[in-house]
Image (tube, rainbow over all chains, first blue to last red; front, top):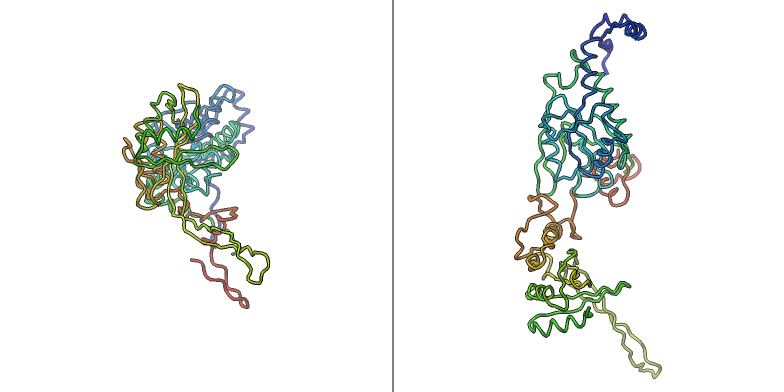
Length: 222
Length: 223
């Protein structure tokens, strides 16, 4: 703990703070649209998230259901599932990540261009889920790639996936385009690609990426 | 369909060099099976498939079984005459023997042409370490292809004559056979929020050592 005071909250355009939301809405009703480039940028990006089209297990069935007419992920602009990682913004890790599959998932993530986001969908992608104590299932995809949104459930309902998507949209809209709190893809030194684990004789090598994952330490009685 | 004894007798008459035995299933299902010796198994399998009375043309399922080495205690009751002239005493003699372990491949056969089944075949390896080769029955039934690969992957039975014997589920660099009874899983139990049972025991090794108390003796430090 240092004694230096916390820096003031970052405001990219101080002049924009002089007008309230109500006043701005009032102006909009009169045909005057006041916005910032940052807001426009976030609005556009958050409403056209293209997910990568791949599924790993039963969660993928729910993901497919979310794309059908009944739940209609197109309402949120995320209906264009891309078969190529080069055209995708969002990786929905939907299902059990086996240790045999994990290097391929990391490789797909590395092939996606920035800005990119990751949703861990379901108990297996979060922690291994019911297969956590098995020998062949990765105990959470966050051991190898950074995860933005975790959606619990086994499997989560399509509504839960849509809720996770709207949470991701809020996260994208809150991202800054410049300054110290700029979005990850705008920071020059932020990591975009992560090492692909090798197949070892008994487990993946390494079993997790130490730059991303450290096991939490719980206070326990021995 | 003939019963299993008739099939066995017909096989023994046709293949005099073969050893065919019936393995009795003591359960209520009573799915008894034929134990074949590996040397004559391919020609017997081909006979079962092509014989006009059986026509077992469909191999629905192939599984592996691991039978580890186990100690068996045989109890023999003997009646010993009492030297004092009383009634005979019954004495139990216990002898212990070691049954060597082996691996087993089990084939479930049906006939699509004759609408009957099932006939179950068993093949046993010599031991669990070096004599683990069995003849592949994939040339007889194509449906055994992936399932024999899975047994090779998870149990380590080598199927001689298999057209494409590679691991099916685990990666090629993997060294173990996870479905064997003595398999030890990788020790990655460092983060278990709600451990119990065996997992709790393994997760304990990752817990930080408790601070030593002043009066009570310290438990051994866990690395």
